[in-house]
Image 1 (cartoon, chains in turn yellow, cyan, red):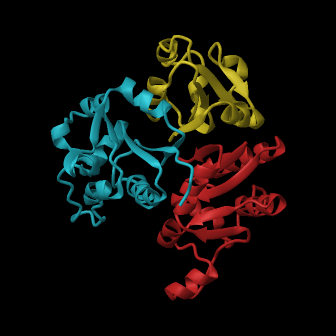
Image 2 (cartoon, one colour):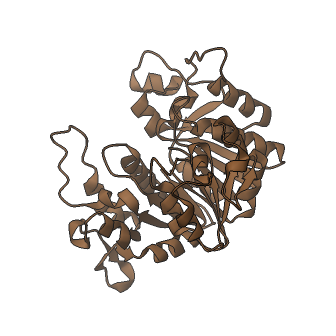
Length: 102
Length: 136
Length: 130
């Protein structure tokens, strides 16, 4: 019974990503979309919070939003999956529910 | 109205009045009550501010919609999960929140509290148990 | 899968309605169904036919109208949110004594119950907002 979480805001602007990560359970996926994709970059203050997830939660990022913002895929944190809109739809279909952290 | 009963969770993470989300999400809950689904509400992060006592909106000119929370019991919405850590982070306790109750028809109409204080981990479990999660 | 989509923000100011549209297109291309697209809060403003966006940018309302027509989508605008924000169809305008209406083709105004019904009938519900 896994959840797909979406986070659409930059973690430097709001607490949404951190709150989402604090509620995600093993087996869930957290998909960063829109301004949320800034949370996928390596070398930010988020590394610890993410590491603290213990690997049970899959992190993903919506590639079109990365491209729009000029973020090079090579600059993402280790282990972040990049998906397109078709991949977003697949994630929503294969998880039991979708929860948007607005 | 429908044979299927799903678990609906309305997630509230925003403060009242600065934006309309708190008020308009409450309107969804009230209308939704007619569909006889298994409804819960979650209050976490700034959403806990929606439930505080003593809201007086006269001077800002906005409608004070906080009394509406007390009517939820009449609409059979009796599960208001409030996150302990969110309260503590904001310097709040249960005493700062409105007294929201429902009458339990299975227990001689005894008045019981609708607010269920839960830890962050318990809130995660509540969320993971739902069929439909609506966020505003 | 049958997807229910909720759009909580209006055109241009937030990316929400764009992401929702792109998701909807991808879902349809992937062979899924869209039970309903429900527009709430400022999302009701996606349904105005009076917008004149710059020609070198996407035409948000027209895109939704075209997608709805091509795939027979049910685009529902919440009546309570619409009344607050001045989004009316002909009936509403007459009923409320307003001198104009502004709803775009392919959208219809209905009650919040349509959102709950969508949640009940769809296999998956996805929300796009702020």
